[in-house]
Length: 255
Image (cartoon, rainbow, N blue to C red; front, side):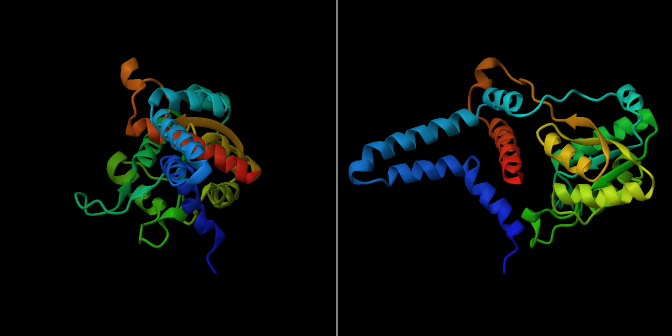
């Protein structure tokens, strides 16, 4: 029997853009008889939605509307909150990077790791990393994120990670497995480093295992191009919209 969690990335991919709107457009175009006019309207609406969701300006609006506000963290703020450790969450790996000869952290993971280590250098706090092989990567022979990031932290930043969870497959397991490592060493207050769109769900997961969480988000959304380009479809606009909607969907499913 297929484990239900293995279907999560497939179902999410079918619902979220770009596949979700494209499937609706296809259904509309395939409508026959009395439903033809309604089908055309559905197809046009789906394509219009895909266009808008691919605009970075719309993605920023979704981020600010659908996600709770989160402020950037500073070293002084972490010290004021009596944080005991900085915990970085994984965001994926590049399973094949022939130019390096080994798997490498994906862009989200590398940005989170860099920020976590930046905070650590300015506060003197130890750093942990949580990430194994996510549900979407099971079966392709990907190396665990923890293993890849431990090597990257040492080779690229000259830093040693105090705690590494390389077994977790999703955010809930990040919290449960890393929480056990931290509490064994008496750590109760952490700064949590992950993307701003992932922060609300991740912070709740770590709070549920008994940790006090100070958010330290990365990837805060701001305009990066001229207004005209912000309203034209782009890959980065679609990516941000998809991530925000994915988190909203994940919170709804969790409830």
